[in-house]
Structure formats: C-alpha cells, structure tokens
Image: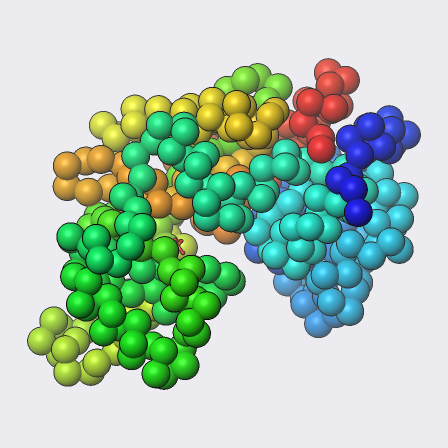
Length: 363
Ligand code: AMP
C-alpha cells in the first residue's frame, strides 16, 4: 500500500467542474457548521452519514446530498469514494473523520481531494510527533517526566488511545503515582501495556482556553477565529461538591469532554496567542511541509504568571469550533460578518477557485 499520490489527486481536481464543487464531510464532530458555512459560500453540500445518525443533518437543513453507509468507516470504501468524486467533492477532515476512516487509510487509499495537509494528521495523532512539533516550534508546553521516580511536583498522568480523558489522574509524588497505578490495575481499568505507555507531565494549575486558529496558506497569515473552554465529566461536576464532601464521596476524577463554552481571553494575553500560533505554523512548515493549512487548535492552560501553556494540538478543525457556528468575538473582529470555522474553510476554497490556485490548499 503506497501513499496517496499527489499527482493523482491534482489530476482528479483538474477534472472537476469548478462551477459545481461539492463540500463534503462525515456526519459527525463539527460537520453541521462546516456544511452550513459551505452553503453560505454558495457550495453544494454532501455528507457521508451512518444509518440512524441522519436526523440532525435533515432537521438543520444543511445537506443537499446524503451518502448513507452502514458504518462511518465505510467512507473509505471504493463506491463511496467514486460517489464523492462524481460530485466534484472536496472533503473537509475533522476529528471523527480521521478516527473512523483510520489514519492509514486516509494517508494511503483515500483518493478524494481533501482540504488541508494530509501528512500533518499523523503529527497530531501520535503523542511523540505532536510533542516534537511543539518543542521544535519553541512553544511553552508542560514538562514531561520520563520516569515516575523523577516526579518532583504535581503531575498529570495520561494514557494513550481513544479513551478521552477517562482514567487520567493527578499525583504529587512517586509513591502516590504507584498507589494509583496499582489500584487501577487491580480494578482492571488499565493493563500493564497501558502503564508502559503512561505519559506523565507537569500538572498546570490554570484556566483552560482552546484557541481556534486558521492558517491561510493563500494569504500566508495566521488568523485567530475563536476560543472555547472544555466542559468535562466528571471533573466539572466534582468541582461543584464542597471540598470536605469531595473527600467523602470518593469519586475518581475523569476528564471526558461533554461540551464546550465560548470564552474570551484577557486582551493583554493576545500577543502570546498570536506568537504561539505563528511559531507553530513556522515549525510545521519545516517539519511537515508544506505545513499547516486551514484550521488548527491549541489547547492551553493559562497560569497565574499569565503564561499560555499548550498541552495539546489539533491540526484540523477541533470540536470546540462548534461554539461559533455563527460568529465569535474574534471572527467578528476580523471579518465583521458571520464567520464560523466552516465558512472560513469554504471561503478559502472559493478564493482558491477564483484565483486558480486550489492546488495550494488541496491535498
Ligand atoms: P487531553 O486529553 O490532553 O485533551 O486532556 C483532557 C483534559 O485534562 C484537559 O482538557 C484538561 O482539563 C486536563 N489536562 C490535560 N493536560 C493537563 C495538564 N498538563 N495540567 C492540567 N490539566 C491538564
């Protein structure tokens, strides 16, 4: 299995009728505003939808054509790919698209033009690559501990895989780390293989801001389009219990995302916000050419020294963009009109079509 051939993708794109481009995605994650934004920019829209999941897309009237499949992962099937190409589709990736289609198949046999940089998706999915990109870009991230015996302050322990924030825990010493690991092993919450892959990092005590950037490869500019903060279960519920009762109820905190709040940051922090966005874009150009292209998100914690510390990155549209399906304070500042992340993507594609340089932004 070889990598998707860029020349083949460009050939497919050349064969498309540019007056009848369809913006397509998988019916999940942040697709509602991507499709709405595409409609606002005058595109035809299509969605690949698992049977039984179609109601929101019908009821919000954001889809012109449904491609129904038994399972989301069927988006990579040959017939579905044919159908997408027949509609002159440009596919917008998002977190669920990558999770269901599978990174290997997106890289190796999804022969449909996509918006963004296909190669960078692996860099956000694998913790070591993600860390390399952030370190080499020179942005402040939590300190990593190679060995539990080195723990010298409060740390957060994370496990790999698609378990979200389930099972993450906080420990303040090597002993506490081992106690909690042993108790989780006994309860079969984790296995020895998870322990070997446990990621230990400095616990940052601060407020959460997830910053939604858009890098316009056509204008060579980093835009800040919105910010959200996470609503996580059960940690946000536990915080509503008075401290003395928290000890009695004995709940183990988890960090499973259930929703997002829109948020704005103290204005004096915005220079740091632009600085880290610019640095990441520069770093990505060197490490994963051509680099960022379109939406990316930096999940940060701001401590009381007013440092913006990045603990996670997405190199595509993040679910928190759903907090501005219409407009955010920041996208309003820049555009003065309704501008969701989805609409911004479609506007970039529209510009690519009118300036005849779609090849710069399609992968
Ligand atoms: P993640 O799976 O890395 O997105 O983390 C899930 C949640 O855990 C975040 O939204 C934060 O609430 C929390 N978190 C992650 N990393 C840290 C950290 N280094 N310090 C404090 N809290 C963290």
